Length: 69
Image (cartoon, rainbow, N blue to C red; front, side, top):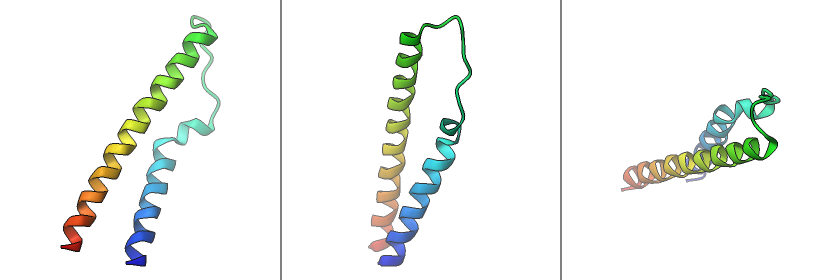
C-alpha cells in the first residue's frame, strides 16, 4: 500500500512539473495588454490548470479503486 501511495505521489509531482514547466520561465511581455489584463489571463490559466489537475486526480483515484478490488 505504501508503494502505491509513493508511486501515486511521484506521478502527481511529475505531472505538475511537466504541466507547469513554463511557469519557471519569465513570461513574454506583450505591450498590447495592460497589467490588469495579463493578471486576469494568468488567473484564468491557473483556474484551467487546477481544473485539469482535479480531473487527473479523479481518474487516478478511479484507477486505484479498480486495482484495489
